[in-house]
Length: 97
Image (tube, rainbow, N blue to C red; front, side, top):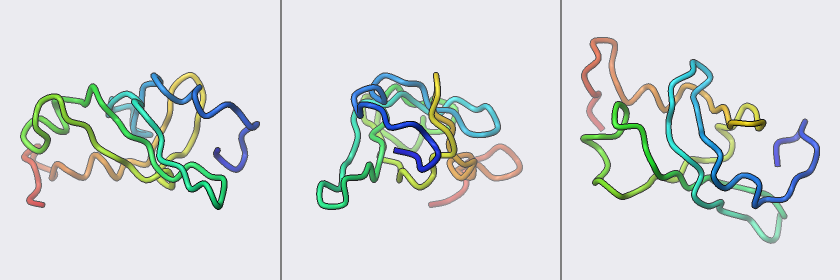
């Protein structure tokens, strides 16, 4: 879990909504990726993705995996760095991959 957080059951992450630190909805945690040797969460599998961020990038019904290092805070919701919002450029159009 996050270094400054009290240890929690991993299953408590599943179902939580994920937002950027700027308040933009990203998706919902469907599963977690684990490093069993290091006993750490290494990624979050997201579903119910934001149409605004992913509509033309991800096929409907598919999800994305984000690295856990992007996580800034875990509480009632999960906050991640605004890196995900950089999918769009300043004009609101999606940036090329």
